[in-house]
Image (cartoon, rainbow, N blue to C red):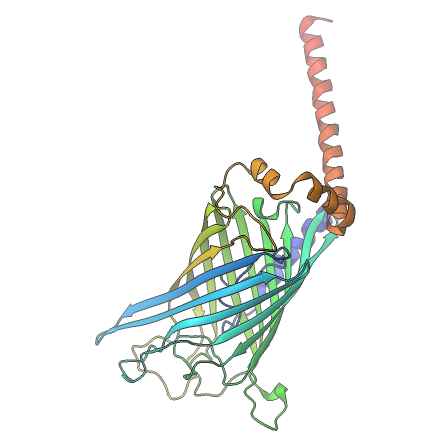
Length: 377
């Protein structure tokens, strides 16, 4: 019992630390494929040979006196399970509003916008007491393939090749079937905007420590999630950058599982805090520094490939039948015998089974005593 409480205590500590971080502008972790939410990502990699495609959009609108200010972004991502512990990904921003079209009518939109290359190294389990975790690292490069930078209402992006590395830690209440039980996810990383110029140290560039925390509660057809995300500038960008003010976001979302390999996520970024305006030159007085809200839509599709077969269009039904579909006897045997993750999980489950059996025996003995007393024996 003490080890279990210790594990829960560590989980609670992670939550408290994540929520107490002072948040500033959102970093580069956006429009990611594979296992994850709108911003917060999971350390679980796709199975070797598996493919995941995501079509993602984000939009905002605000009525002003002269016109309606809008901001829309559309992206598509491809993630592939390269091996058990390695996942590679590519994200292309297909469309980006430039937002100040009323002031700059020659700049309406950018097609296409920037490109992300990603490599996730993950699927590393560990336990703390009876609490089960996974760990991973996400490496990201953002390439400037669009013409216009410093886009109003969007996170800051430099002209250089930006690099970010994130540590991913997740707690799963049911390690064998991670998607079928409550889970918590924590990201913390370093982002270098690579804007120091030629001949200067990269540590003179604009830099951020970025973070995210998320809680996911799944049901048979819907997953309910809440994310909080932001970062801390150690070096702020130049004063002519729009997105240099402090801000804090909260993102609730609902994920509808239409089929096993096809689901749709709908979420909303809610601006909780916005810092003092420090951008020069200043934007018009009635223009916001950041959107007060943004709607997110993500369509995720996981088809079968030549390397990995999965029931893409099987309907989401009882979890027990899905488990039989996802792990046959042979793969289950290999998972238990050859995989350290399986061995660690079996140890945890054996302790739970023992405790449940002991409780059942106590209940049975209590029932026998009640029956005996009731018959006068």
